[in-house]
Length: 275
Image (cartoon, rainbow, N blue to C red; front, side):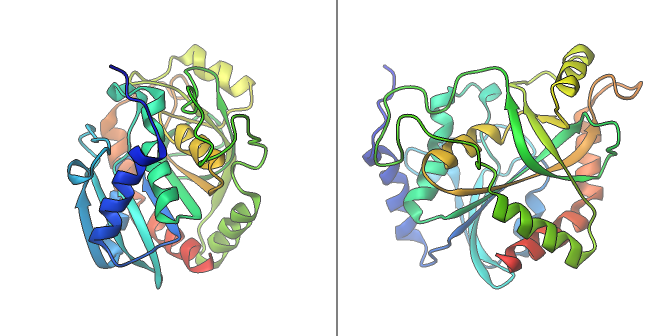
């Protein structure tokens, strides 16, 4: 039988977490593929396994730790998702609202979404960090499909400023302060798990896409629905299919993420400090 979602369903997760931690962060960070090492920098950490949280989801991707980590970064209380959930893991789009709705009930006001993505823009190179200005979602259902829960947001909602412009300015300022070059562009959502074809990448480029990945968009849409501000950042971990004369591998994604860890961490600390 299909799960009927209510506020109480998500509140069960939130109440469990509130009983386990004394912190009440306003900032949540979703750590993308191989970017989980940022969580190592948190102070006063409280770590909770996803599997222990009632009504939460389980991450099945090897490079994702599957833990919710509360702590302090740059002197501010934050909660980090070390590991996220994807449609290609077998979840329905409607299930993918879970973490962001739980964040809303925890009192989160700002959501920083990070990911490892393939570079579509030929001016990009491996290791670049791209500020997401907007996204293209050309396939798959909306995570807000189904009965609307008015406590989270309206049935129909505007996403013009989904990637919050004031947060983009904060990211630019932070990048300038810490000496990190920040690219900018549009993120293309692909369902995966296969990498995209060269023809698809060429089409995305024509449509204005600069980077492509298999996450982030469902979280951004859910946040926009419930009034959470969103900042999106993509680590260009590889060039997308057809850009270079080479096959795509997860090993390349992992190696680039590891090599870029220090730069990514420096930028994230500067952003949180400026919030």
